[in-house]
Image 1 (cartoon, helix red, strand yellow):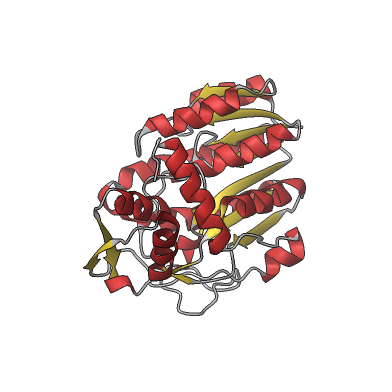
Image 2 (cartoon, helix red, strand yellow):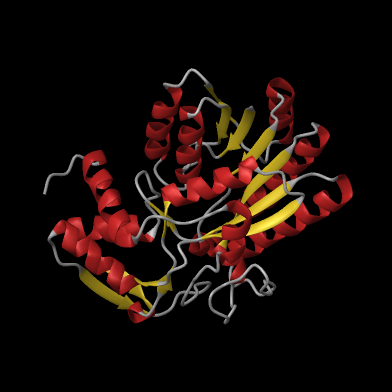
Length: 319
């Protein structure tokens, strides 16, 4: 099966692509290699993928409809996994137009070309951010999601609504995956696990918002890849799934585990709650268990050392 994966040089895109390549799938990956974070990391991920004979890569921005159209005509994918997006909650407050271009215009380009080219199914990344101000714990796919707290979450909810209309109007199979705080080797430098580790190693203070009274459902990348592949194997007309670890971890506890593995104490700078942030995320995964046989396997006690070992090796650090 020939699969188009957008955002293939990104964190989740890289791991999903590599997993599928290992199993012999023919993958065309695209990415715009933007500088939201140091593109060197994306290029290093891409070097690994380029070693596979069943992988091709095109530098394409999904907001560019003409280039995207030519690509679809050229490769004729059977399925599409859309992992291209402008990420980050706080950055969406500073740079809203980047989110409109990638997460809205780009998404419409992808889904419309899926329709035009009779693609068998579109799997796309949504986010736990769609839950916004939701007070019910854990977050269920049956909960209302009409109160996003940042533009990022609003664009992801818009993706889900657009997908619903396309599934209804054109019988296009679409599946949205609400990812919860993904971490692991090759992770993004703007994410908590990377920031905490980097700050401790470099003797810099960790900015801890809301005085550290924050909880996140940290989900290891291998579990995310499993859930995404399970969705890819199905042909649901319209579905949304939570992909999380079904555990809400205190950021203080995450820092303690990193300290333990590095044998080094963190410096903490307590700060007030940031605009657009939520105090807690926690995934209800009952629907994912039932429909995808999704069963997260990696605890933070196992996952954090794996991330740190990669971080040290990648950055050439010995401790």
